Length: 414
Image (cartoon, rainbow, N blue to C red; front, side):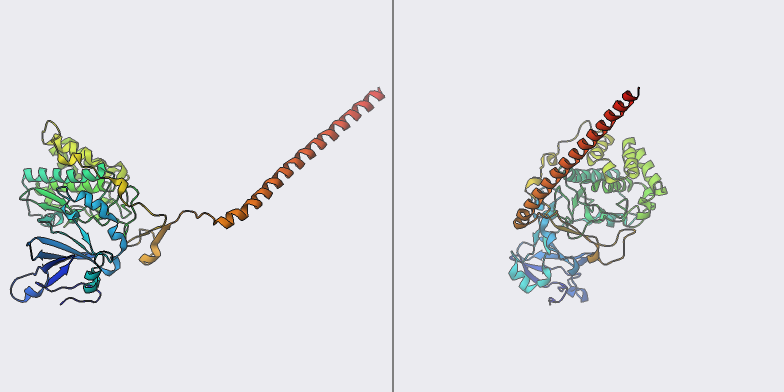
């Protein structure tokens, strides 16, 4: 039975009516004790359940935000996701957000689904699952192909001034058999002039240079370099054996200019094709994301490394995102960090808010009242200037008179 307390907690095989459809919650098992346990993935900000449409049998993911992260800013990206949703690899953008305006009856039944999102279930596994098992091996062709598919997808974003802002192994889905790649989790996506998300993204350990805001148009560049390196390197036993778990690098590695694993990855990529090694080294040594190689540079290097004579015809090359119709930053937006930055105080999240407010214009009555004051100041300034000039002229005149009298006296004595 569903709990109407602080969490959404359905049982396995329980029916859920939502957004005009009826679903069954996927259970861990169809028989035995686990038949009552719902299959769910627990994250730091949300829990994801697998739902089955009872009419079509199609699988869906229901992402339920934890109470602290149920913020109105979650729905700011709906217009952008609707433009991406038709592109291969962006199926997770076909999202329906549960809001009071559109799903009031659903929220009466399930009040804890406020700002939850319903989307197609993406098949395969995330990349973090693949590299968490260093004994898993990719053949050369799969390695090349999934790296290229990743770059194709991220290039769509970069070309339109958009960034995912948390590109990592956990947010990249791969179907190794079909050699397909998909991106998921667009809660913190950036576009020019975008309203700020509920929490400012700081990236994922192993895919960032340092713990700092990734809220910028170039934030995917360093993480793209790491992901391409991992996908190409996973064919090599030496690279696999040095993995740190669900990512090849740790935060400590990424904050070091020349760790052993960086040298190993760079040498391996250089052995595949020199430009790949050079791009990886540039990304590693870059002082910020802005100075990392662009995604287009990675694409060109992968094409050259595979011996293709020209860039293949790609339908994604013609995809355009109309950023002009997307929501824009309002005069006052609050940025909330998930935890203090290095050197910051250990105050709670609410105390680490920064509010951007334009200088308010004075009300009309105050503007009218200030005009006579300004006029009086101008008149006073002109009077002061006239007085200064008069005093100067008088001083010069007296000086000239004294000099004339001196010459008269001098001449009379001679």
